[in-house]
Image (cartoon, rainbow, N blue to C red; front, side, top):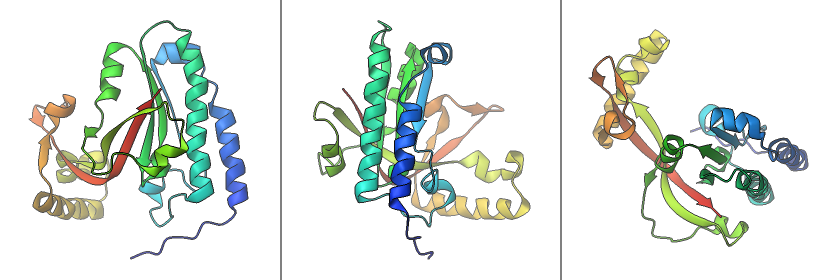
Length: 218
C-alpha cells in the first residue's frame, strides 16, 4: 500500500487558494447564458484531481481544507448575486465531497433539462449522522441533502476497453477488475439512470461508494 505523501508549503498552497477564489468568483453571464451551465472545482496543485491521478496524496486538512470550503461559499455567494438578476429559475449548489474534499465544486445551470440533470446526478442516501462537522464551517442558511459519492464503472468500457483507446495491458486489467465488481456490487442498467444506450446494447454501471456528497444551496 502506497504511503500518503506529506503535503508541505501550506502557506504557498493557501495563497493558491486565494488566487483560485479571485479567478473564479466572477461569473461571465454572457457565456453562462450561451452554455446554460457553469462550474468551478478545485483546480490548483497539489489537490487537482488527486482522487483520480495522484491517490497517494492526502486530501486537504485543517486550515487548508477550511479555506477551500469557505472559498466555495464565497464563489457561490458571488454567483448568486448575478444569477438573481436574471429573473428566471436556475440551479446553484455547492457539491461538498467528504472525505474527497478535492472533488468539491460549485455548479450552476439554466433550463429545465439541465436543472433536472444536476438535481438527480447523484444517488440520494440516508445517513446515520444528520450533519457533518464540515457543514458547520459554512453559513447556517444553507440547506443540505446527502448523496453518495461513487466511482462509477461502465460494464461496456471494461468489457471492451480497446474501443476506448486502451492498451492490451489495460484490457487484461479491466476484465479482471470487472470480475471483482460483479462479485461485490449490484449492476444498474444505464438506460434507467441516464438514458444511455450504445449501438442498441444496453450498458450497465457499477457504483463503488467512496463517501458522501453534501449538496446545498441558500
